[in-house]
Length: 146
Image 1: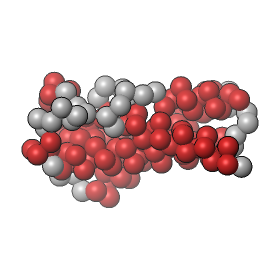
Image 2: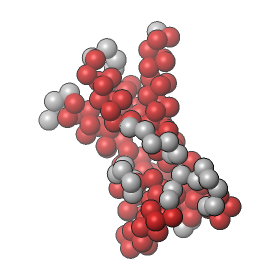
Image 3: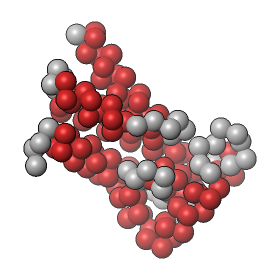
Image 4: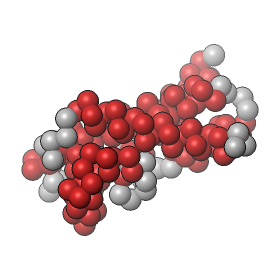
């Protein structure tokens, strides 16, 4: 049982990091664990989703204080990506957060949502739909549910 907890916790941390500063691939970790057939798919999806959503919340929070953090070395978003995400967000509004699961543009979108003062609860709802939907689709493809 402690070994399983470490697996779910490790996936949570990988998904969290993938949504924030570190360039990580939570999809590969989830797919690999699903293919072992040693762990409950629902718990794997829940762990990855929770970590990735929490990582996006960190990005939203960073966006809220972007003026204080933008010039820091550790800031997770390049200026060009931030500009591109701001244009998307201004054009499509909160619904652009449905693309928060995409590589390259998704994380900057979550930072921009904070910077542009998207209310937390609408942010959380839309990002959760996007992130859980992505992991469900990945699990379905990996396990040949579709």
